[in-house]
Image 1: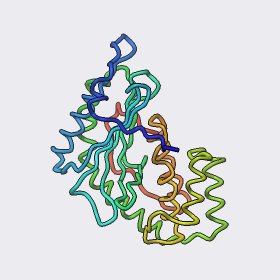
Image 2: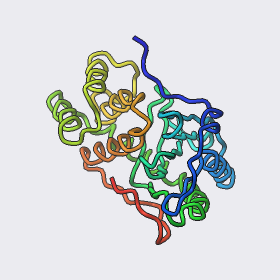
Image 3: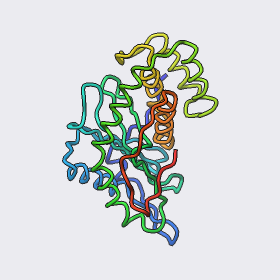
Image 4: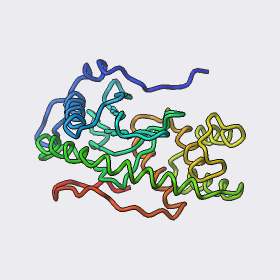
Length: 254
């Protein structure tokens, strides 16, 4: 059976119908977010590697993922992502993360200034400056995520602890479902990739994000942020936000 994929050509998102502005709803177009992100990446001195888009509901829900070539190490590279909607189902969100080279897994942190903004009020004028300021600090966020990775590699899990963590992901946190569970179980038995840290917390984290590759676009960012927070908590790893938003910015609470 073919694997469900939500990958979308850039042109398809640009062609998606933008809803009309009303007194209580102010849309931000996918095109505007693309342009602002790419320009902010350039202004920050970063070099774009790839831009990838996923969508659902005929483009009414969309994610943009932008990987950075010159903020990387031998295992992963910086990734900047956003989520947007035209059907009022989701607020506009931005988050910093990484893309793992060996498997293209995504790690998304909610601790580095990730934010959301409803499509109301001053969002259209607020968004450009927020994006620019946000991306400027993305390099520092990448450094912290490198440190988190190394700490997770040092935490070795026995079979029972792995089982307990997987159970919590399903029952307590609910960011993985039976489909992802089956993939994780197969990875535990015979890993598709070698993450260089056998039986570690980092390896289990990668098995988890590997299972989440084709999650629905409306869930992609929240579920990945929840996963990152979960594994940091499981390892007792504490980090502090590096980005101080303007007062009107609504922090993305995870």
